[in-house]
Length: 255
Image (cartoon, rainbow, N blue to C red; front, top):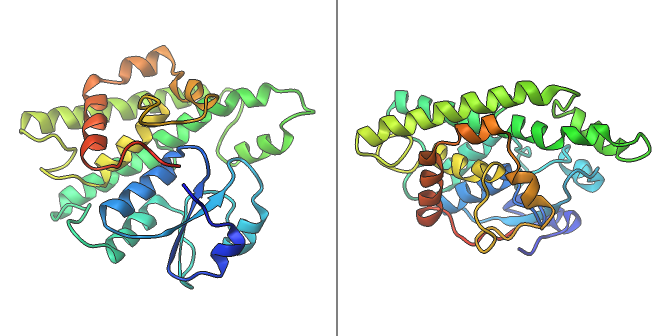
């Protein structure tokens, strides 16, 4: 993917989407997939993973990604704000169910995947907590950044339990839907829940290299899960993920 620099992006109008360059960050990949599903075009802007990104902070007030910047409106970083922006700007079938109960369930499950205390949050802790064991002379800045994400010595224990609980709940919902004849999390059509699970599943069981050409150093990190987490990855979750990518999200991934 070709990215605008922050300096160039600041001079442009329309929707600009800040993304982590070179890696399939799940929050960013989900934002891309949601905008694509809603036929929303944007200009991609480069952010560097785990770096200060001072120019980006000066422009948006944030150093992370994704960030959606629409004209002079306030920058959006929360997954739900980005989903709602796609609903406002997009066309075609909505990614939110019509009924209020189904809408609440869809957003609640997506929150368990992408929100604070969610799957992505705790998987990030599991993958990065080892950095805290590095000598004090290295990684000081990175450890400070990770601390803002709840990475603390021993935090991976609680994170493992939370991840397992979320995975079991997602599998239960898919089993209920399968009994009703549906291959989606909610109702009979794709919703944000389906897209967010598909994208965040990369942190547990990435698509093969030809479909997800991630850097060599990243794949082992994403693939290494504990025995408890591995046991909680019900095959129905991976089957669902593969179906969503095959039907609703463009592959191979481009980042």
